[in-house]
Image (tube, rainbow, N blue to C red; front, side, top):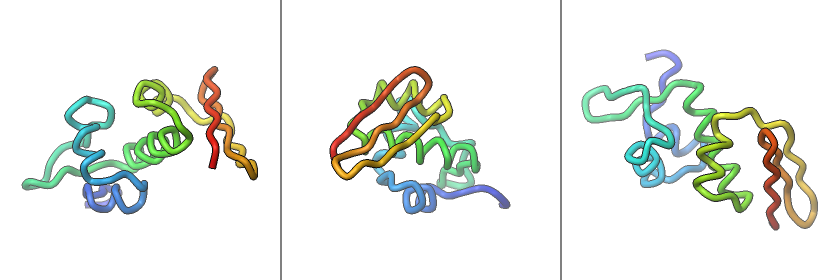
Length: 97
């Protein structure tokens, strides 16, 4: 399947653990396109959404921030020596590195 990713591929490319992806599916945060056999499959858009969720969580955001922010486009990501700043819509997330 072109432009489809397995759970393992999404995990490797996004930095999310397999368990996180399973939990996000169960809670509706990031649901795969469907299943092929017993494997979940994700689109390119869903892969990008997984990357956004990981970035929000890595920046110290909560799952609530991730739920809200993963649907919006990142306006800016600034990495500083002491941390990083991510703006998502009208939300500002600051974290220490």
